[in-house]
Length: 245
Ligand SMILES: [Fe+2]
Image (cartoon, rainbow, N blue to C red; front, side, top):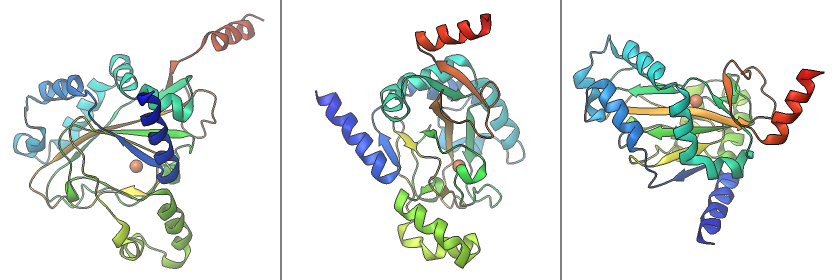
């Protein structure tokens, strides 16, 4: 009963704002495997361990090592109740797990204001964003809620450039403060981004997307960008029937 209450609260909050945060999730096995891969116990100090010119190569090799069916399965089990409530029980998952290193004081390390849908993702997806260390202020990322996103999108024609948009909406720009064990779940329609990291610590975070197996895939196709991860018996039987005739 209490579980239903919290799940209803999560869904209501998500529907209103376009995002929700679940707290106290056991992400330790993922954090431990990344610490082991990077030979670094304090991931917020990764910039002291890996040189600036090596960061991108290390990030890509970490992404490759994490992009396995075991890790995708592990992440889904952490958020499965929320996913079933938002997109249903038959689920496709992004094949490659994205890794972000947000290193202090590097001006080419920012993610400009954007929404994933504006960059070619389908609005039927849900983004799961997992911090592997504490995130705060400019070391984190900012996210505008649904209503503000609509206002920003309709102001683009008038304001023309991202810098002016950020200036106009600066009072509603909040950096997400998250701890290890928190998971952010958000709609790919929301406007978000990151600034130059002016703190003295790095951020390492993961993100990947889930969607209903039966929703439109648009540019990011099944068996390419996405793979199946949950399929129910009638779908399996229907596919077998169609393939045998
Ligand atoms: Fe994004």
